[in-house]
Amino acid sequence: MASRADNLASNLSLANFSKATELKNRIWFTIGALIVFRFLSFVPLPGVNPMILETLYSKTQGGILDLFNTFSGGGLERMSLIALGVMPYITASIVVQLAASLHPALGALKKEGESGRKKLNQYTRYGTVLLTAIQGWFVASGLEAYGASSGLQAVVAPGLMFRVGAVISLVGGTMFLLWLGEQITSRGIGNGTSLIIMAGIVAQMPTFIANMFEGGRSGSISGFTIFGLVVMLVVLILFICFMERATRRLLIQYPKRATQRGMMQADRSHLPLKINTAGVIPPIFASSLLLLPLTITQFAGNSVSPDSQMGSIIVSLNQYLAHGKPLYMALYAFGIIFFAFFYTAVVFNPEETAENLKKNGGFIPGIRPGKNTANYLDYVLTLITVIGAAYITIVCVVPEWVIAQTGVPAFFLGGTSLLIVVNVTVDTITQIQSHLLAHQYGDLIKKAKLKGRLR
Image (cartoon, rainbow, N blue to C red; front, side, top):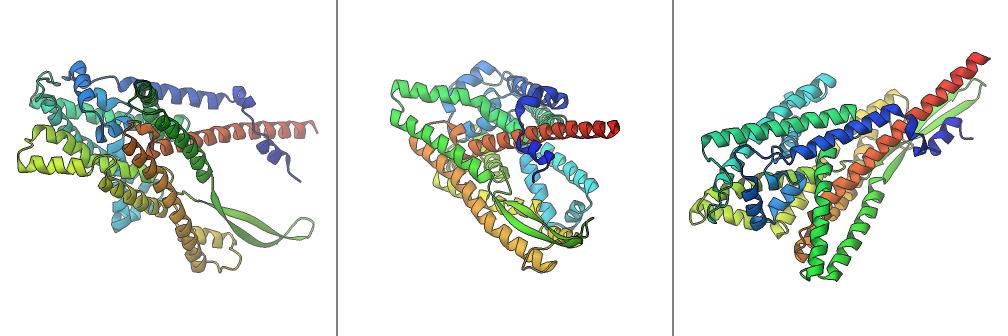
């Protein structure tokens, strides 16, 4: 028979939202932080002419710039203080996690618990500053040559001072976003960095939707294409929701224990393993690694003559790695598969899980505790990661190819953007439900204490 607590969990409703004061404060804080993020995306770099920059961007939009602009919430289009977004931080996280897996000294820090995690986070921030400074220098150099061929100058006063000021502003903007994301994680709802990326994507949706339907009205995009994209969008959302909640449940059995009535009872539980253990990390990591060199070459190419050898190399690189090209799609799919396995290995340790089960007396029926359990967990995790990696690859690559073939510049319909939006939304709603459940359990405990005192 279900307990009162179980019935309370199954009947969880948003009707008690008004009573959860802490949850409301967290939600309002999250909304306020995201509003600050959106305001910052409209603050241009010092020394940049926003009107001329908008004209130049409208002439050169398309390809990798639009994709990067989508992740930055339009910050690149306006060349704002947060034009680089949190992508340098994600790239630095990749480097630090790879180094921790390969270098023994950094690997030892991971085993030191909270202190080791703080040390790795510190190294990640140092790497973020370095990467932002490098990218910012190339962006500033590219801005000075941006539009020179058309007689328009995006920078008011080009020179060393502008480049230094732009680098300092971009580094400050990215680090402020990291701080804002940490504040959302600790004082708000959901993962702050993921919410910032999602907010940037969602902010671009109205513009892309309006452009798509405007193209249908003018005849540049066929009605059948728009209908197909809408159907693909609905199918992808349903498929993502299904796969993100799919788990492989392993039966865990504990030895028989004597109860208060003298009966012997064996406890059973399940170890849930998500099909997509890595979540949205693989496509974000793969995108950031592809965006890093392409952004540098895109802006550096503006200051290099296309007739020179370096200019021809940059032009060829941008052509082969352009959005929707075969080489780009192949590298993107390879990056997703690699990071799906890599990040799964980072977040789930079969040996540690097997050791914890052994200490608590738990075992998988038919599998010996200890090393055999660790090998079995690793085998099952590898199998479901193959399915998860294939799922993420299909969701991210196929829509990108369809959009590239149709020529519709709706990057929010791409698998990466859609996966991020759906996944972050589901995780945030789950956290809200957890807070509501904790609030309802708190009321249940208070009532139980009150009845105990009355007796």
